[in-house]
Every structure is written in structure tokens, then in C-alpha cells.
Length: 404
Image (spheres, helix red, strand yellow):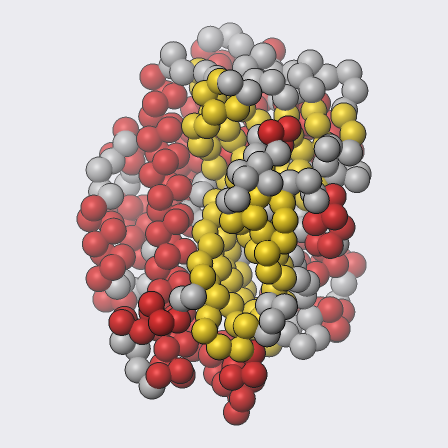
């Protein structure tokens, strides 16, 4: 059950978080005033302030979508693969650090991307098969579409990461977190602006509690255009993670088998879990088919696997959903930030970062200081707050972490 309800809201706001920061609560109250909502708003235990709508919120509507409630990293999510060996093999003869170096050579991070000759045949094939443009993508500059092709299989920066972990049995895993890269942000920014412009033309923008909550109605032509671009970007994000995982496993195959034969990939994958956590899906809830927006939340239908990562120095969890209807069958997407990136850099030093990531083979410099573990909420408290939403299947602790 949710820990509490926000009082004096137009629509119920059910909160699983022990506490909600003032800015985030104000956003939730604004969201709950929108007439387009369905049933209630569900707030996950990792909730924090975001653009327009809080990160860690789940909302539904029968006839509308809010681009800013999805966010600018459309389709951002997780992928985890369980490997057929234990951490002891990784830690032999300095193998773990060499694998980290191989991943960093293979996967562009931050603002980097592949050069034209480096794009894999798999990525080229995906780009060809998914070239059918929506109205916006048809109008995008060729340079932006080319950038999207060159970024297929790249990590990005911020809280995106690649980790090699071990679970409660010592079995090794690869875990990664990334989204739709620059093309997803370009599409999101355009539709957020377009929604504001549309509501301005209708004379309805000033009536919104927050202009960032501008929305498209199903009767608007822009509604279908947005969904076309949204679903394309979600597919792009999924393939981006697929391509990274394929490349990472090939690097591991080299150290395990002495070659990078694609046929080795099946032997390296004993279990796999994939999930989005910034997206829209058409689902059935409380007897009605609705558009569900999860911004920083994971689908957790009964028996459905998911991934809830901690920070770069904390545990992550592979979970299975309990199908709680009050959460729209959802759960948290991670630990959730408890301070801004600026505040993390002001408060902590590189020495603090080294202490908080002790035992993890990772960058320990000012370039990733804003990702220091203490910038995030305690992942174990987040997990305890959603015991009625998910059951833990595996507990992962990182051995190495790659960030942009």
C-alpha cells in the first residue's frame, strides 16, 4: 500500500516515498490538477523534481499525452545479462581491469560517437529497417539523422553507465543504463514546444498550473505525430542498449574464449532482463484502456522482471513485479537523486568519490563527481518502501563501472 496520500488535490496522489522534497510535491500537486488524468497519480519511492513532471511518477489518461511527463530521454532504460561464470574468473590475472579498458575502447561515452566506418552491420541494418519517418523526423536535418545512426550503440553521459557485477551467488552480470541519445532529446524538445504552442493557440496554456504540462489530446493531429516519434525513439533506445550489450559481450568473449565470434553470445547469456523507464504504453487499468506514462518508473506486472539500479557504489536489484494495481503495475526505476549535480560537486571532493566507490574499478575523477553515490537516495530504503510492488530476484554489486 502507498505510504500516504497527498491531501487537497483534484485527483488522488498515492505516494510510496517516505518523504517528498518541496519542489517535487509542488509538481505533483500541479499534475494532479490536470483534467485529462485518469483515476490517480502514483508516486514511486525514488521520486524527485524533474522537467514539468517529477521523476518517479506514473500517470494515465484515456485521451491525452504530456510530452514533458515522458521527459527528454525517451525510452531510457536498463538491460542486464547474467554470465555463465563467477566473479573469481573476472578477478584473475587483472582480467577485470582489462575488460573495463576494452569496454571503454569499444563503447563511445559522453558526447562521443562512432565514426562512419565504425558503425556495425547490425546497427546499419536497424537504421535501414526503421527509416520510415514520422512527420517530424522527415523534416529533421540530415545531419541530425546521421548523428542518430552514428550514436547507435553509445552510452552517453550523466547517470548512464555500464557495469560488470556479481550477484548473491557470485555469478557475474553485465548491467547497462542508457536511452535514445541526442535524437530522443531533439524529438522530445520539439514536441514539448509544439504542445505549448498548440495550447497557446487554443487559449488554454495560461490555465495550466505549469506551462511544461502542455498536452496533446487524441483529437489533435499532433497527438498521432507525437506517438509515432515517441514509439520510434523508444525502439531506438532499446536497440541502442542491444547494440552496446552485443559489443560488450564480444569483448568478454575474447577473454573467455580467445575470439570475438558472434556465435559465442548465446553461450554468454544465461539470463537477460530488459526494461524501459521513461516511456508511454497503452495498457488496461481499472477496466479501461489508457495511455500510461512512466517517467522514472518501471512496469511491474505480476511476474514481470525488471531492473532497479543503485548508484555507482551501491547495490542494484533484478526484481519481479507483484502487479499492484494502485501503482499502475509499476515500481521505482532506481535510487533517485537527493541533490542536484551542482550541489554534489560543491559538497564532495574527488577523495570522497574514491572512498564511496572503494572496491569498484571505475573513474574516480572530477568528471564524474556529480555521480558520487551520496548524491543519490539510499537504494535499500527505496526497496523497502516498495515491498508491495516487487520481489527481489537477484542482488547485484558492481565490480567495475564505466561512465561518460
